[in-house]
Image (cartoon, rainbow, N blue to C red; front, side):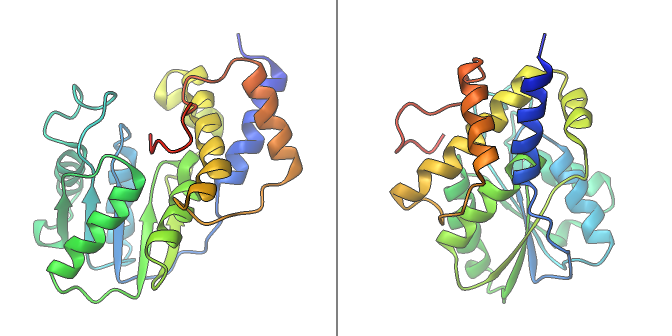
Length: 221
């Protein structure tokens, strides 16, 4: 049973992760691979709304996706987007990345290989990782403009879609930890974290929502 206090603290972290960017057409979209096919659904929707002419889906597999996505996260995303009407020639697949930093670096290299002119990128992630993904992208590819997007969902809706509310809160806590420690190691840009978010994060850690924390701050996952 998750307490009302834990839900309130999780909501603070969820709200902080939302960048609130006003979307507009960009040179390209990068869809970050994960267990969540909703990223592919949102990317396809934004393509049909004219937000980008080209998509990169990036991601290999992880311990949470190797069984569900045996052909790799990016390839499963591509297949899903094509089912939703995105033409094959509008999609590039980057199949090697195993963390957010590699997602950005490898996608950039793929776009350069294809001689794509990139001045702005629509970065599409899971809802609870918008800010983390944005901070990483800004650090690794500062020459372009980044806009963050994710499936528009509330925290309860997302928890219901995953089917494991405790895991979702664990993931929120893990994302928040990385936002605070990774800038110290040059993995992402520094961002100001409001005091109430820090307090909520620490309270959730004390309550045991710690399965997605990194013990070694230099680890990327």
